[in-house]
Image (cartoon, rainbow, N blue to C red; front, side, top):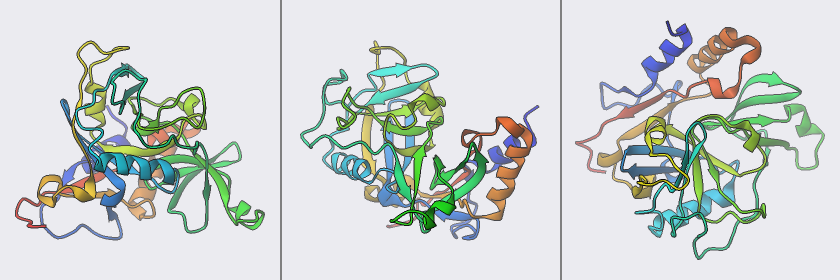
Length: 281
């Protein structure tokens, strides 16, 4: 039997809205479509929430390349079971990139008092929580009063669904290639830039054909910034607010169930989709 918290979360994830009205704003936030991607792949649709607070340069480059249609038609050429799926290479080999400059590493970021952060636990002197939907570790808030910029250092942790940027040996060599985690792999933390998280379609990512290289790879039919996708095609997507009482109860249930084994990766992000076939937006 599944633990109670898993059953409760599953009842909320992908729960369709029965009315056209937006859900309770105290519990749900609408996805920031300008900072989200919709990938239509040969296995189905994947939706990624991008997190510019953690990796602003990477998010901006990915959006630019998406709007240049660079990603359309590219394969997931390297897919490793229990690890990740890699794509975004115009050569589909792992050796290529775009015409844009390589990016400086954004392995860590600065968190400020106004950063949208949901703390969930304290582990080893760091605070574990979420920035938007991205699971992160961070120095505690006390650092705000001890640093010149009134910030604290944070870094993403590679849970299942986290989107990272591939690179060569040079830490500052990321360009267009990205990977989507099929399972948690914390040894990547602070070694590869994390720029978002799959909020819908992790089952799709896990269904991609595997191989190094993949013999018959899955591929991206279309990758678009969600803001550029008609509402009739994407619907309206809502995530549970990290500062809501409902999410706090969910976190408490998970933490109580797992005790010392608790991690940010264990907390699901409930998502709701409002179908809007009659919307003319």
